[in-house]
Image (tube, rainbow, N blue to C red; front, side, top):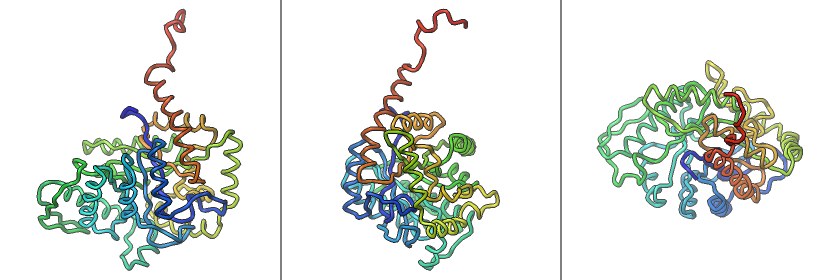
Amino acid sequence: MSEKSIKFAYWVSNLSGGQVVSDIEQATGWSTEYNIALAQTAERVGFEYALTATRFLGGYKADGQHESVILTSALLQATKKLRVIAAVLPGIWPPALLAKLATTADHLSQGRWAVNVVSGWFKEEFNALGEPWLEHDERYRRSEEFIRVLKGLWSDAPFTFKGDFYRINALAYKPQPVQRPHPEIFQGGNSKAARQMAARVSDWYFMNGGSLEVLKAQIDEVSAEAAKHSRKLKFAVNAFVIARDTEAEARAVQEDIVRLADPEAIAGFANAVKQAGLATDDKLGMWAQSRQQDLVQPNDGFKTGLIGTREQIADRIVQLRAIGIDLVLVGVLNYDWELAHFGEKIIPLVRDRENATVSGANQPSDAELDGVAV
């Protein structure tokens, strides 16, 4: 696999309720033991990354949660190659504490720890924890300071920072992380504030699911903004995968998920996420363009279009790579078998298509060009 090959991550199942807000039966679990076994399976079948979710308060089918940072360390210890991304909430986590913990985790895993900085959308969670709730763009300003502090403490020199949210006074940590210049920093969000923040400070920009046109527009915008700061980002997209022998079978599963959606939980989630995209002036943030049926998969995973036969899904992934997607974040209905199935059956199809493109197998031969007017 070359550096130009698309990479794959999966959602760690550290929240109860699975990946859909539906009463459909799901073959999955969320215990620590279950997740360790799942990480080992994912590593074996070709996943490069795993992403934990962060939640301190239940609701919307996620009434049980395992804390992301500690679980990330356990998954790293149970694997050898898998890179595991810990989701953290600024305002809950102090950056100086996380920077120190992360360095130790990075050493324990020989450089496989990463962070996803989640600016926050769940107001009730902050209220329950007794933490102040900031308005939308202020949350992203805090997240940007959070990342700048992480980077500063992951550098060699004593670091001082005087921001609106954080203060650091000539602090130097030893040792430094294994990864240089620092562990990978992921960030999500669709709003203007999120896009501009990613362009300035993040390494990876996570996008909710979307059509090729919508995703390409986001990639172009954030890339252009990053270029103003002499930076380049990588791009990841959320996708809910339903692979079946026929497209009709896959679509029927999607229809069942939506038909059996929990209306009360969906309504609660829809109301909670108004604090995200609809709170922005441009109404373009997270979930602002999501319909009720999209919210059944909380990160718009249906929209990415990885629903159909294995071959159709592989073709779609190649299209995603062509528009600039570097990583696909996979969620599935039945973790017990669908994650392994994706790695064993779909990832090889994607690699075959990538190899064919690199080797020119999809280009016309000299003989085929004979007699063609040029």
